[in-house]
Image (tube, rainbow, N blue to C red; front, side):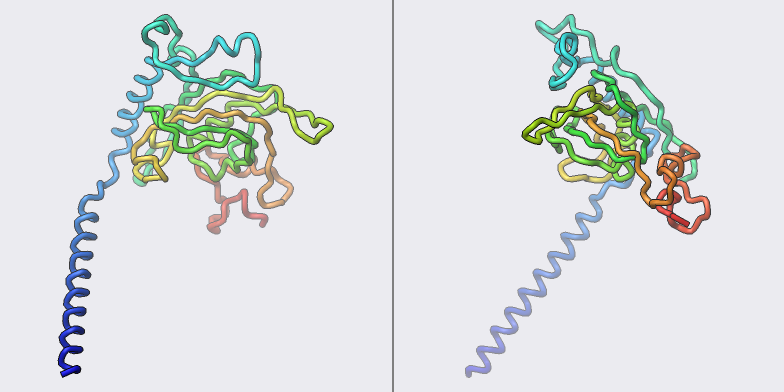
Length: 264
């Protein structure tokens, strides 16, 4: 009798596990069917650019705060309305650069990168292959902050999205002094913001709390630049990284190792 009860119990457990597995399979298939295929990159670029222009046309930054003192100000965006109705919109203050993205069809699609220079900086511009010591905040167009570091950290620009990499190169580094207590004061650093479409960001990928097809805004303060030689071959990575200007690392000997990482 004990064996009979045990067999029935095992049968029930087996049936339950089988049903659970079946439900999981069905659920997974349903989710797979709901995954949106990549959108046309040219069409998405146009949609994103309109969203960016709408934002830039209806918002301003606290430019008055940067008139009397050059540094230690935070960049703030606000809507042009009410008592701010006479403010100069961002669209009249940003600069624009066209960045070309190579598609899988071996064609190129132009994307507009907008950048605002509140302080240009007094040092040097980083190359897109350099390391930068900077503070930043990344937001969506609705103001949601998805990532930030108020304290500066080192960023290898080869490891970030194209919009950030290209945009950071528009600012100049600053300089610093060391106090008696070993604290550091920075001066003359570049400060501003980048505005770019999803094609220069994460495009159809979800990145943390960033939804697919999201245009991005980054506020940055560029403190220092390290002109990098990634492979220690005596040639700066800036001279090896992207000489053809397609946004991808060069691999002249086609050995699968980019030139800036290839000491051969």
